[in-house]
Structures are given as C-alpha cells and as structure tokens.
Figure (spheres, rainbow, N blue to C red):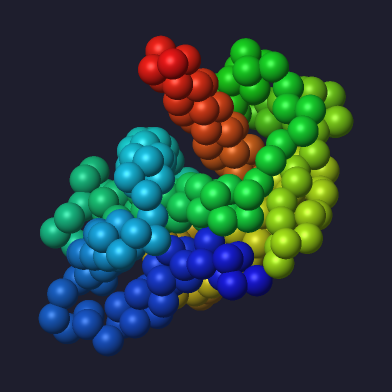
Length: 251
C-alpha cells in the first residue's frame, strides 16, 4: 500500500495546498499561490527522484491539454474562476492545468510502482481514435449533440476483454479495464466536490452557495480518465518499442 500512497502523492499535495491557500490570501492571490505551489511540488518530486524525467514530460503534456480545455470551457461559461489572480489567461488561472496533470501523475506513478500491465488492449489505431473522439467531444458538444454515450458504446465493445493487472505487496490483482476507468472517474468526482468547496473553481449553480457537483460529471471524469489512460498507455508502448529498437541496433 506504500507504493499506492506514493502514486497519489501529487494529487494529495495539490489538494492540501488548496486547503492551505486561504491562509496566504492576504499576501498572495490564491490562484497565484497555487501555481507557485504546484511548480514547487513538481520540482521537488523530480529532484528527489519520486518522478522520472519521462513522467514530468507526460505531466507537461497533460497540463497543456488541460489548460486548452479550460480556456475553451471557461469561455463558454461551463465554470468560472471568480477570484483575482495575476497569473490568469483569458479568465483561466495557469495553475488549473495541474488539476489534469495530477491525474496523469497518479497514472504514471501507479503504472511504474504497481508494475501495471494491460491484457487484451485494443489495437493502437482503435485506442487512439477513441481517445481523439472523446477529447474532441469535450469541445464539439457546445455546437452539436453530445455523443459521449455513443462513444461509450464503442469503449464497451473494444475494451470489453481488456484487463488491468497490478501488484500490491507482491500479489497480483486483476480488474476489468472499463471498471478501472469508472472507479478512477468516481474518485476524481469526489475530489472535485472537495476542490469546488475549497474554491478551486465554481460551477454556475455554486456561486450563491456550495452545492454537490452534478452526478453527470462522473461520466465526464470517466471519459477524461479514458483519454488519460490511452495517452499514457500509448506513450509507454512507444517508449518500449523505441528502447527495443535501440537494443537491436546496439547488438
């Protein structure tokens, strides 16, 4: 369980900083404090070798993808960041990308520390197409019908035989990949409730008083988990293939 706890370190630290940010509100705007805190956490985790160089690269990719989505969603009024900050871009604080990066951090850490393996993963082209469709739907659903449930049927069909194998205390455990998507999405939704209660961002129905995040967001987070999982899995596969090629060339 120690390895599992280490895998969650970055998300836990981010939420801890959110809780503590109120203490520094008179010195520095909370969103600016969060950006400094997230950058500091990442630097410390890298230089203490908790995270590898490749994992930091993946986190940077997720930060940029998340920030792009934030800029779009805030522009269309899906949620807001009402507090003042110096490090805002078009109404979006730059720290917000780290909320997505924390998901990537957990996945990368868990993959390495729990010796995660995937059986019966669909073909790379299928996985990439599904990942692209999910990500694009986050944007297109503002202009055309939301097709997330149609994409969900594709996921059920192509990932129906896929299984995740991971190790805890030397013992192997198996879980259907689709179930792992749902469980991680659910726990992120719980974390989102905590984040909004701490003022990380606000939905329209939370401005007068805090309210529980809409249950539909569980599916949104579930789909985001799938995109994240596919990106990490494909990057892991690409790295493995590259290393294999290098060994052949060396031999």
